[in-house]
Image 1 (cartoon, rainbow, N blue to C red):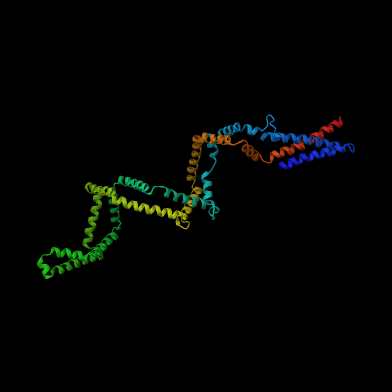
Image 2: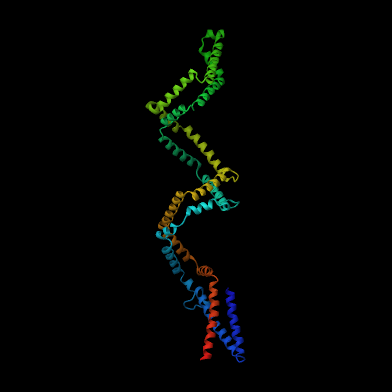
Length: 406
């Protein structure tokens, strides 16, 4: 457009020179000559005006030219003041955000299928979030973090009165007969443990028997009888749901459930056991090992594009989007939070934002300011020159017409 405006000015100069040579041939050439002469004046005047805004015309230090570079600090302060007055006041921010449905817009984005396509925005968000999650876990001191997590869990667990909780759980399990599979498992476990330690049991019986029994070999028969009796008893208890020993075990469990809730001595013993467990170094070492395995597993899953973690994050984002679209109460809460956050940012950081704008513009050199402002205005600057050329020509032709008539 700058080239077009300049060529137009040169064309008017050529027409002016050419028409000057043929003025005597016909009166119409006078109008052409007047138009070209005034168009040159208008084009040159507007070229000077446009150029004077941004630089010195022809490099000459004419007063009141290069206006924008000379006043860039004042422009920076004016821009900052305009931003502060019209945009970053709490009242303006609150009013602007009153009609905004931030939650609905976020929900539309999260459920948009295009955002889920390969390389889509949501996929990039998911990948970036997973990588950020992995880097955070890697950057933190695993021992210190594990200790902090363990201390937090321990402090919360220490506040819980475990005995009544366990007592109610056991009482409810007995009432719903959910303790029977546990009882059967304990009986089977007892039988397997006894089978694995048969030799130890025989040795204990042999050591307790006197020398006469060992000499006669009766200690082996006694041990075999004891083991057979125990196996038979366990089998009967396991098979017979009405066995007397089952009743005794259930009575013991019911008493334990009652004592855990109501007996102060039993509750104190459980609390002592809990404290000993929390203070045991072996438990702390075990937890650190568990935590490290969890941490490494999370890092590995976060960086594996084929892992389920990415799918879970995508599903979670989609579910969040549906909730933001459909749940009016959630929308209201999110929009209120966004509005309060925006007002809070304007109140707390508005002055810093305005100062940042002002200082940034002040730091620009004259060339940068000129190029950015001129580029922002763009083609319209050259249209000023073109319009000035045309309007000047029309005015010149009008004056020439009036001169002939008068």
